[in-house]
Structures are given as C-alpha cells and as structure tokens.
Length: 268
Image (tube, rainbow, N blue to C red):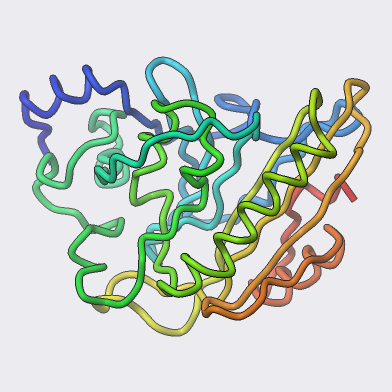
C-alpha cells in the first residue's frame, strides 16, 4: 500500500487525483442539482462499504462517485454537463489508493502503486471477460481533456456488456447530449448515471450490473426545473427505456430493495 516515488511524480504531472470524503455536500457539492436552491444529491446508502469520492482533475473537482467496495463497482457518478468538447480517449486506467488505506495519497494511481488491492476492481478482472469497463461519467460528456482523463478510474466503471456499451447505451449518451444542447443551452444541466448490482461476478470479484441507468435535470437561471428525464436499460443490447424521474425513482427503489431518489426526490 505504499505509493512509489516515480508514480507520484507522474501523477503530479498528469494532475489526476481523487479524494475519499465524509460528505459530498461538504466537499464537492457543485455536481448535484439544486432546484429551488435546495441541494439535492442522490441517495447515499448507509454502510461502511459505501465510499463517497470527489474525483479531482488538477486542483478542481471533476465529478463525484459513490463507490461500493463490497461489490467493487460504483453505485453512481454525478457531474455537470457543459456541452460536448470532443476529448481524446487516452485509455490509461487508474485505481483509487485511498479505498485500500485512507492514509494513502488521494491521487489516482496505476495498480502497481498499491501492494494489495482488495476493495476495488483491477484491470485483470475484465481480461477476456466479454465485458467493457463501462464509464458512468463518460468521456463523451467530459468538459475538458483533463476531465476526460480523470474519468478513466476503475471507481467510475462497471462491467458493461460490450454490445450494449457500443450500441444502445452509447446512443442514449448521445441523445441526452443533443437534448440538453437544445433544451438547456445557457442553463445548468446535472447528470447522474449509475448501475444496479446483478447476481453474477467477474473473476469472482466484481459484481456485474443487471441494469445501467441515467438521469438529467436542467435548471434555469432562477433554479426552476426546465427539463428532467430518466433512462434505464438491462445490461444487454436492448433499447433503453425513457421515463419521468418519479418513475425512475420507483423502478430503482424496487431494484435496489430500498428507497432511492436520483435527485433527492426533486427535479420531477
């Protein structure tokens, strides 16, 4: 669990870092919708296995992730959408050292920087599995190249059926971007994307999601909801269902087996 000096130098140059925190609201609240001035993050499940991560690019937080160390996948990632920037995919994957020991560096790091990785996925888990490392905060929606690079942490990825990732889910990401470009231009758009744990695992370690879901909330300059929709699809290349936020909340509460609210019960 000791970070190597060359790795620290590399990461200092790359500017990629993240931080396990006690509270999203206290540390990185800017990625959560605030309709009517009420900050409305998604439900944070209780339990020591759920870790709140404020993902950093350079000295600026880029997005937020709730991570499940028991299933070794994120529950969701939340971010602001500011339009398409056409970032380049560098495809260098990192892990979060603080998930192994909180006193480790908050910087994203290669797997080789930590002596033993127990609480999160590693690249080997995905090898020859037929599943992609499915981004929750996607490269396609990144607001800068450094933010794009910061999405390549395994704390922001879950096993996604390869045909679903390149098919219906990619179409959904593009459709959401186009919709927000039309309906939310000049206003504030917030997106939350998450997964529902399924019954099976990769490499007997990483839980394979049964579903991927996403939702957006667009607020005008008076913090009134202009547009909000939810999406959910099974982790296979079938069409993704579009629905209201209320309906998505009901579906997710049923799937999780406990109450879940994407935007804290707001943005309806």
